[in-house]
Amino acid sequence: MFKKLCIYQPNVFPPLHYFNRIMNSDVWVMLDDVQLNKKVGQTRFSLKVNGQEHKIAIPILGGNRVKINEAVIPYHHWIDKLHKTLDYAYGNCPFFETARSSAIDYVEHHQRLNTNFKLFCEHFTIDMLRKLGWQGEVVSSKGLAEDLKASERMAEIAYQLEGTHYVCGNEGFQQYVDLTHFQNRKLAIIVQLWKCPEYPQSKGSFLHNLSILDLIANVGLDRAREILVSGDTMGWKVYE
Image 1 (cartoon, rainbow, N blue to C red):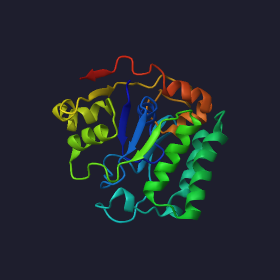
Image 2: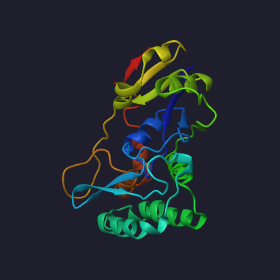
Image 3: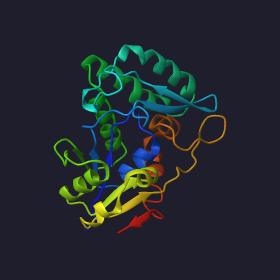
Image 4: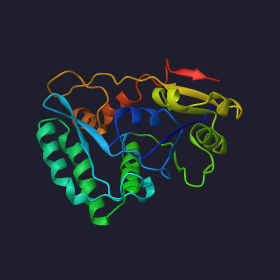
């Protein structure tokens, strides 16, 4: 019996490929004990404004070498901007209120709790996954193969959790995966090759990989679920 795992760092209002990968896995391992890398994009999310991709970056306290589980969000610096941008970009969309409550109400709730970056991202993603019907297992990477690096750590985490397949992105596969780390543990690798099907958006050319908020605002949760699991893993490369 297959047991597919993916390993992801927490991300603010994640992009669609993020949800597609998790929803095609049985276990999501939250890589939440490593250094925050702003270049990877965990602190940014993309919306569609005036037909163009518009990136919003949330501020993080602690400098450029802070760990994900230590990063602090100064909420008051960006809530108003998010509110205005969502109203302007998606106010006329059929499921605007669903997207708005998923974002604004959520942010305001966590501002009151003064939730750190790690928990803010993880709680949103888990809550959204459940709303989208995914019932897989969520595991923190803390305490798992912490003495290993990059590819070998991913392989060892999957092995310790009794996985059979590690689901990864194509870019990550090209940059850091060493197949021998997985082959030595009798683990297969599935490389995500998914392009989001087109769905109704605002003016301009269709943009494929915006934040989950764009998809929810335009099509609602039920249709979003269908889009995010479309095609299953058909056509994805498998290395055994």
